[in-house]
Image (tube, helix red, strand yellow):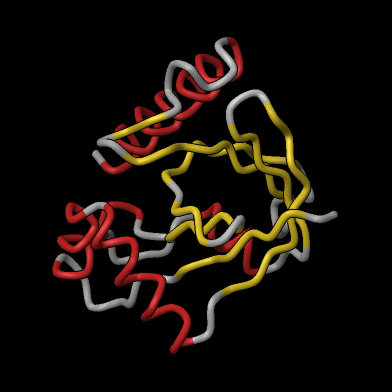
Length: 143
């Protein structure tokens, strides 16, 4: 069953990405009131580029994403890839932006998590589903 669920989620991500790109983010650019970006990052083992649609928090011109995986017990693959990346590319609407990647340290993570939950209360339930702390990554545009 887990393999079927993964296949469905993967297909949904591919469809979301295509729709987002085809419309410059007009469709697929918001989910549950949160803005969505497309994150493209190299795979940590293969180096192959992977694109994932993600809800994000704007924090002073930086893009903040969280590896919630819907509250699953394991971190999402895209976040594992981010942990090994210095740089990535995000698409925000029709714009492509090169970014540096930083995994938030505990104090910053807590502050960003509070901001995220204040903006999107549905995220609060993810931490109650698992014992792991939801990691946060800060994606800063490269000038």
